Length: 457
Length: 169
Ligand SMILES: Cc1cc2nc3c(=O)[nH]c(=O)nc-3n(C[C@H](O)[C@H](O)[C@H](O)COP(=O)(O)O)c2cc1C
Ligand code: SF4
Ligand code: FES
Image (cartoon, rainbow over all chains, first blue to last red; front, side, top):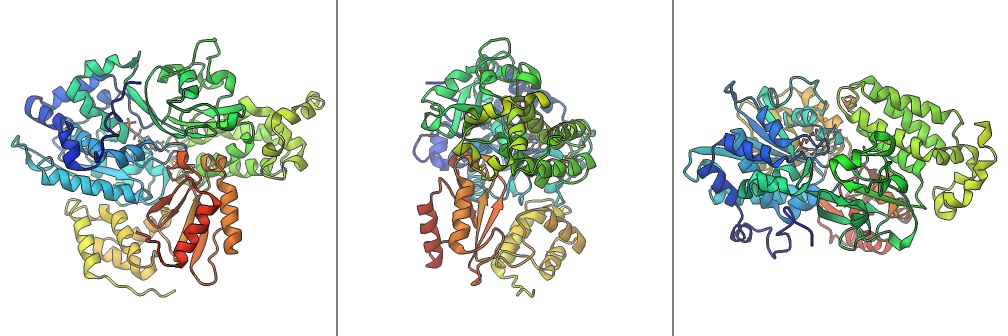
């Protein structure tokens, strides 16, 4: 059995309840930190752990914490990012649902390290039932003296609340999230200033993902160095993977970073291989924003090394032959899936979710949505494929927040690795009229049709 | 469309509790939670009058509330069906048959996506990924998720709604 940190206690009956959680060692990290460590000691432990933010970007958490402005004397805040809206990702919800106190405990210790006295958990509005679970857990934490004034008689005060969003993917971006928490539209801010200097209400703020904060208690209890021993290289610790699509066992799995892709994919402990034993066509390893990979680059890098689930290995080859660990949203496609349809689906998503502040993103996502729809429904033109390529390349890097990039990368990767599918759609419009075209006739069966006409490209 | 506004004691108590989560001079921060509470207590939609009421409570100008309501997808500016079936239309659910199930439900109810049945009971809408990708296909009804859907499960759910057995919140 693999090493577990976050899901270790998940099967204990009643672990959602405060009493059971406490009996099983819960809140020990709060006692340890508040009674035996200074806030800066706690930051040092997190630094030593090498833990990297689990929200998608993989930025070292200890380093981010050390940027928080403690000198200005302004009030500081921790904001936990529970917006979880990246298609393919459902791990934070799983954690909060099954072991809510782990997040509350982590948020208390983290707030202490940041010397914050007022912190929030920002949860997406659709997770209303989890909002209620967290509200209850927070109430229990107050009732048992883990929150409020003079916690454990140490003189440390902390108020923690859960705040709900109302349906907007962009509010997962940290500055949009802060705007939203201030009661405004979720328009990302121009950085700098970074939230660590000027965040919520202009005050120093750290935003971290649910999974990141839920890990902090283990690091405090066991030491940053112990944490750093788990994993591989600069990918320390464990990671939650959300697995979905055409696999036998969809679900949330905790893996030790560095696990081989082969094992994660095929082992019955994890994905269990392909649903109905159909052929694998493609896989997105880290949520819909990261490049899709064809099978030959999923299990091996371009150099022929085994592909591992780690930040470095998944990025090996850059975006040409690699991808990114992202949020750990692992989406698997068999031969009945249509890559064009999938790309259109994601483009429509980004178009829908663009906040509209910058024209390359606002116009570009709309344009890509329209063109991809046209191609998918058999109304595409030969030149549309190059047009798509050109649009995506002009969005990337030219926007206020990374949503623009996130909208570009999936389109670029799909064209790069699956150009023949786009061509097939354009050349044989009558064959793609039915949206289940590859269910009826997978690409393998129709590829030969393309070979005769490829020269004219 | 006129909306009957009822700022009941229970609702006001909830609003006051929500306001207590933010510094006294940062009332505007309670905007989203307060709008949720108010909308839930008013048949799941927000008329202009109701938004003005929220502006008054939060001590902000009405435009600040309109700006927010129009930005977020969970706020409804028109009356909606009693049972709004929100199907995830994003790719992972699609791989597991989401699109076919949404079509099935539309046909069964005789509506197109976005339309309300003539009796005002049901509507079917497509929404973006709800964080249930491994348990798809799925739909949201009120606060609840219905996952690993099949035609049979949808038949039962619709029947339960008709018999008033389904709680939205
Ligand atoms: C468009 C967009 C959406 C994002 N959505 C989320 C999200 O839902 N959850 C999350 O934790 N981070 C999300 N992020 C990343 C956050 O901006 C931020 O980097 C993260 O919360 C930091 O936490 P971490 O360092 O613990 O990963 C998103 C970023 C972008 C650009
Ligand atoms: S890149 Fe898109 S989502 Fe981000 S700020 Fe610009 S318009 Fe808004
Ligand atoms: S794709 Fe349907 S819940 Fe995520």
